[in-house]
Amino acid sequence: MRKLPPEELARHKREYNREYRRTHRERFRERSRAAYVRLRESNLRRTFQLRLQSLRHYGGNPPSCACCGETELEFLSIDHKNGGGGKHRKQVGSGVTFHYWLRRNGFPNGYQILCHNCNQAKGYYGGCPHMRIGDDT
Image (cartoon, rainbow, N blue to C red):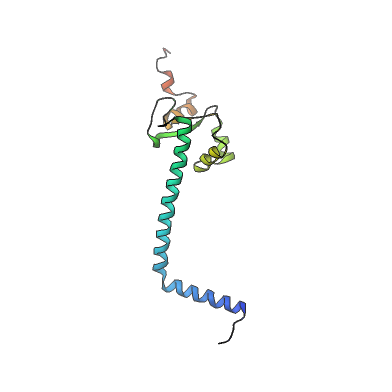
């Protein structure tokens, strides 16, 4: 058996692997799908735990909206108390990246938990209708 030069050996391996993958395409697709599902589930769990940690730090246990008291996790968000959230998200990132940033920086002050309704009202109207309840204006 003759020994192939490194370049020819590499080319031969590439051709063999290409042919093997072509003939066993379904097997590779199955493995890829299974790996994707496992990885996705793992990432979702990790992301949920990180988000829950942030919500509990700023909103108590169980976390709740500082304005209306909503406790449904899917409805809760982190609010920049003094505004500037859009600018800050551009600097550090949003979503899970923002939660990692909070944890990495020791959960700094200046944030609160609001439900999405209260957070949007604060951003659009400067305040939430819940804060106006009882006003005679």
